[in-house]
Image (tube, rainbow, N blue to C red; front, side, top):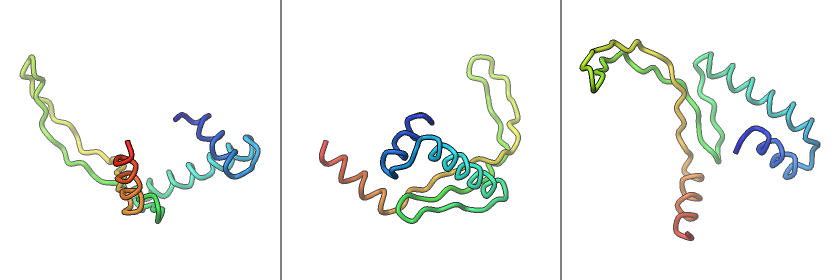
Length: 96
């Protein structure tokens, strides 16, 4: 699903115009991004939580040349699904 499809889906379910929905979605993404940049966890009770984690520096070896490269530490966003979402996915996989 891309941005356009997400806007259309939300607009249909919320009975809003696509323009209103796009502005709302852009605002939500902006707020979520700001919170994650500040190092905070963003959670939705029935969906899951996004949090920022630090990946430590590590040594990488190129498989064909065997050249070693030091990969610096970086921040990454991690998602942990809620138990509600986990159960919904489990039920859906049984139905397939």
